[in-house]
Length: 61
Image 1 (tube, rainbow, N blue to C red):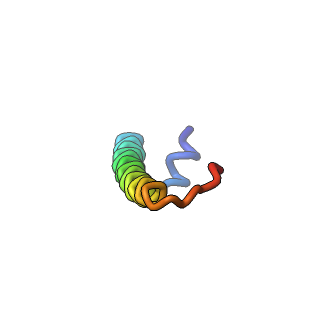
Image 2 (image 1 turned 30 degrees about the horizontal axis):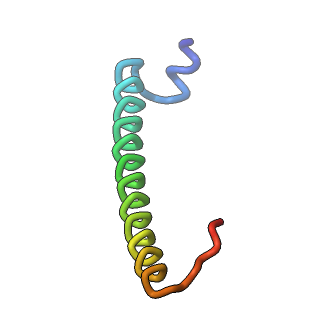
């Protein structure tokens, strides 16, 4: 375990903080990505709905 501490150059507490911070950042990034995908889906559905109102039939993929 001491060799691992020397490799990272951080104390155990610093390394724990680093990994927790990284996870918090990644969770926030994932949540924003999900929000973006939901907005794109809503816009796509609005276009599909309007096309159907105009008589255009679309293949479901």
